[in-house]
Amino acid sequence: MTSVGIVEPQAMPFAQPLALQSGAQLRDYTLVYETSGMLNADKSNAVLVCHALNASHHVAGTYAGQDKSEGWWDNLIGPGKPLDTNRFFVIGVNNPGSCFGSTGPMQTNPATGKTYGADFPVVTVEDWVDAQARLLDALGITQLAAVLGGSLGGMQALSWSLRYPTRLRHCVAVATAPNLSAQNIAFNEVARRAIVTDPDFHGGHFYEHHTLPRRGLRVARMIGHITYLSDDAMEAKFGRERKRGATGFSTQEIEFEIESYLRHQGDKFSEYFDANTYLLITRALDYFDPARAFGGDLSAAFAAAVCKFQIVSFTTDWRFAPQRSREIVKALVDRKRDVSYAEIDAPHGHDAFLLDDPRYHGVLRACFANIAAEFTGKTS
Image (cartoon, rainbow, N blue to C red; front, side, top):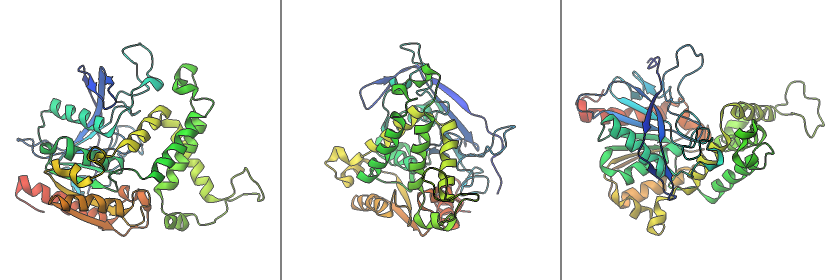
């Protein structure tokens, strides 16, 4: 198995305004995307990969002249890998509101000529899916072989099956949920408060003050990172190990290795992620709830779906617990939809969907081999 090699981001501008769920419109926006593999003659082998909170369009491959620039799902996508780019044309899209090239809070608002900042409109999972559909229109792809996503990306995959049911043949949703629990919304709110109460936030217009709310971003990332790991994973990796050189009996210095790890993650995150983007994306997570329009009946929400589903969860994922995936499966079964479910016994918590677990990758390898057989006639 090898990498897809050097990849280059592409940008697609859109002049037609994008109508948002909030009632606002996004004008003159650009979507950044990357592709790997070759689109076949009838354009039947395209797979859209939807990104999670702090990821982007860069799903696989590397950037020329940049060390350690592998795509965030490079272990899954590439020649001979579970999502095999020898068979599939893979598209990664950066969503509006992100900070990795697509139009977001860091770009110029055409209505004012100033940086959007806090004035960037609230976006939802449904808005992202609509934007992705427009990109596919521009690429001339009328139907996808599959939409794949993990975590928040899995929510987008589910939304695709509801908003554009005939435009995908398979929905592959990993480590996701039909909506956030109250506890998850609470975690998001604490993280957002860390950001907005940072004195350098300036109501979201910190760009004009030539500063960044790094302290708030650090805390937000630390809170989030705790929820991505299982207790077992933390115990195995750090336990109660003291940091080398710790003096002891301090309330403010780093004393334990787990503290050092979290601070390192927070520091790193605060240097590359945008604070307004964090607020937007966590709120999109909060709002996602396709059953809401059906009085909370998830089965009724899936009445529009016609594609096949592969749902995957992980036993130690307590942020998007297996029981939430089972809710999705039950709703699909009640609707007599074609659904397969795999619950992987993995110790890594929510982050398991990003890791190279052979059982998990085996499930996706078989899934995509079966999808490929629909247009190649071969299963291996």
